[in-house]
Image (tube, rainbow, N blue to C red; front, top):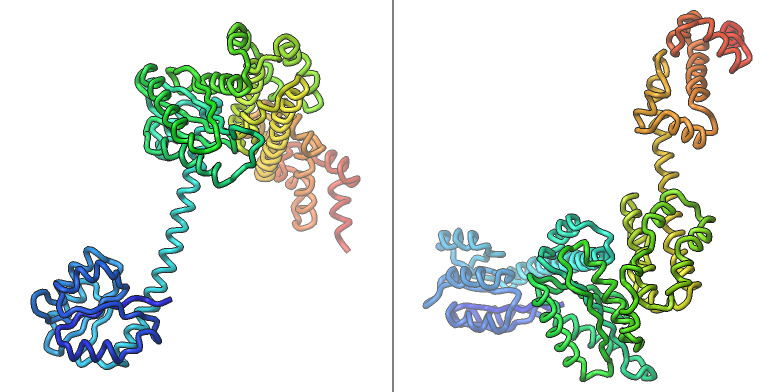
Length: 526
């Protein structure tokens, strides 16, 4: 890679001598221009944008230091080589203060100039690589920022995040979510003639059109869903403002995509007063966009009482996720969801409410359990596409099974992991306190924040031995060690391993080892 050099020198002989005798190309540079003073150089510097400026200090009209100061302010990345005479030390000091890269004393030889250029070339290359790395890091940060925004908006529209969390997290991500009213709009973009051949570039153009019309509007947040869907979260101070803003935006989008082969179908929820109610607006938008896309009779849908549609027993879903087992899914579905399907599952609206309720209830519990919602409930990111494919009760059963069984699997793994940590903590505490005669089950149960009966059950399940048996084992093992390595009497050892009664200690020792303490010690001796 070559770097551009611009030379400013009022002495024409010096200027031409350096210009014509330095092998710029061999040193990785291109000579891009020259001037006789700083004033003449400035407009040329702005045009040529060199990487390196070589300038004399003493020149008429505008000297080298004045030129360096302006260049530093306007073109800070340019490297500067100053040419100076022996009697210009004061100028040299000022040049250093201005951040000059190299300082060469006159008369300047070709060799000196080439050495200076080589050093600068290395420096420029290093800085360019560092800048490239920095730019990539900035891009990654921005990509992560965009991804985190989309995840937050996704959780927001399905009710999987609280209002407080949404506002706080949104503030960190540059999303101002505070408003008096909110609504959700869903856009479905598809080929006007479905028999036409898909063109990726044209489809991307449609996406760019939609994004471009939204990105500078602080009251509209865009959530790209998949190949067909956009979700818009809108906010405003009045319902009327929101609806007017929505209609204007949809009109602009329709107008701008007319030049493509794609058509836009939209569905809008009603304005809501709280962030927590956004999921209701989202479901309403889903219903309308699907009805519009499929040409369904909206009046027949509206005739179904919405209150009835919302009667999915969310508490039953939560109880199943907390206490149920995978093998019990069929029974759960037949008791709580099958009856709903038998009465009104032919309604798109009804299917939407059922499935979204399952998703929301599941996402909330997964979050409570400390799980990553995107990983445990990946269906959260493709609700629209899944709903489009739910056409029968069996389709609903299959999709509900994926969500609920996935959550149960996470729950069981989480519980196993928690029990492992709990048992490790309990054993560490036992190992440190077994020598205390009053050490009890209640004490360690309180430590791990469980009732004594629950802790006893968990301990036995995870270790295949009771708490009492484990404590006795630890005490007897320590007693064996003391019998073999010390001359302590049996009664003294009993007290050291947590027994107040030496006779009871001897009995417990023989029961566990087959030997009395005395017999065990005698075995160790030659």
